[in-house]
Image 1 (cartoon, rainbow, N blue to C red):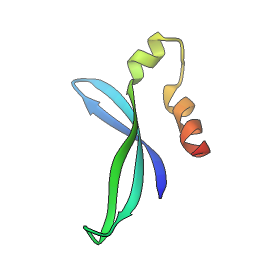
Image 2: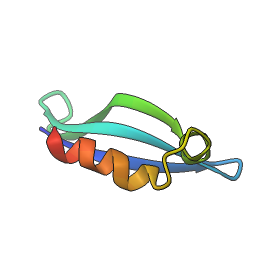
Image 3: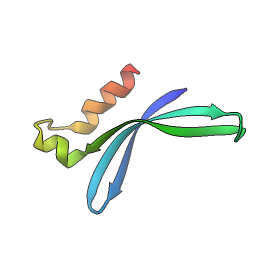
Image 4: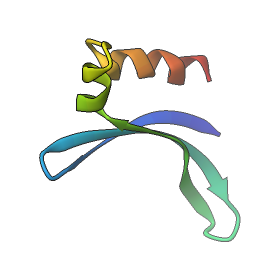
Length: 63
């Protein structure tokens, strides 16, 4: 099991989520599920976090 920070672009905004990667016996391979949705980069910048990607990457590293 591993975690990573996923960046998705939709309608000109960049959305972040922490995703868990794990082995699925039903698929006989890797699978992913969202651990935590984090809203958009623009939202976090408005809340005062200058670099939300680096900020949440630290959280992923701790997991």
